[in-house]
Every structure is written in structure tokens, then in C-alpha cells.
Amino acid sequence: MKFAFFDYSGTPVRLSLDGDGLPTGCELFDSASGEFISRDELTPEIFGGRGARLIGKEEFDSLTAKLRGAS
Image (cartoon, rainbow, N blue to C red; front, side, top):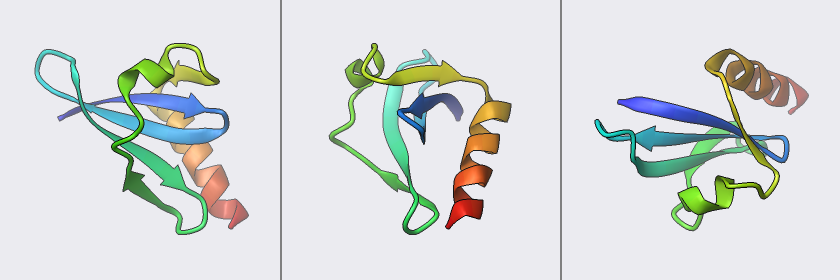
């Protein structure tokens, strides 16, 4: 499975993609639990300019680690 990684206003988000690169699921990092939770209400359209930017896996992992360390 492939992923697309986003920084959504300081929150790591990953979209799972199918073989054609289309989104099949969305997971948002929850700082309170330190885990990713599925968020059905977040659709791909929300990432078209509402405080979200596409990032690479390295930056995504760094942001996730930083948030986990702040808990």
C-alpha cells in the first residue's frame, strides 16, 4: 500500500492510496494518544489548500516524532 503524507496545520496526516494513486483512507495523528486514528470526515478535497501541504516521509516522520516527544 502506498501513502501520501501531509502536514495539516502542524498535524501529521497520511492518506492510503490504491494502485491508481487514489485515496482509500485517511489517518490523522492524535497528539493525546500518540496514535493515528481513522478520520472518515477528512476527504482528499480538504488538502487542496486549507492549511495542508504535501510533505515527504522523512519530514512526516520527524513531525510525528516531535509531537510524540512533546506528550
